[in-house]
Image 1 (spheres, rainbow, N blue to C red):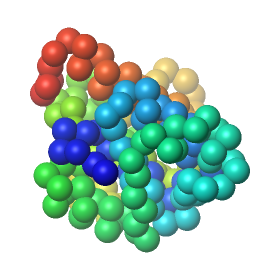
Image 2: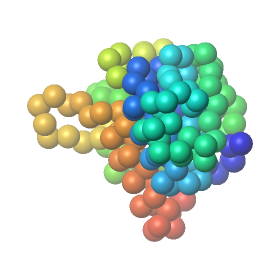
Image 3: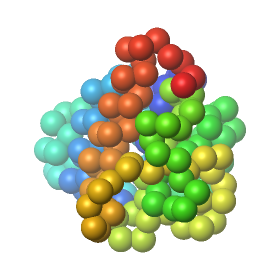
Length: 161
């Protein structure tokens, strides 16, 4: 299933099966990586996740937990640094953040974001710098930017940047 050097994307009750499927495609593009689904997140087996993932849901290891809290505890107990991807005042821009490439990145619900309780459980918060007015990027696009940063660092040979 998961390997110790594998980055994880924790999806906290994503409402959209299309977003879940897109994150599977992104995770597969930087294999090895894995996905942890929580709460109401769509799970592989449904038509929408399957079509959007273009079959990558069968290639990317994944697990489901009833709550984000349980998923964060699982990641921490597996030795992962858990990083919240959220627009908070203390968030570090992704390209400046120092994190191991096998970290677990938690992406919040499209409408609610990441709860304060879960934010407090994370070792770090990161943000994707933006110049637009809304300050909100689609969750699957955010996963793709994180994946690119991981892959870029892998290609440079930096295990911890």
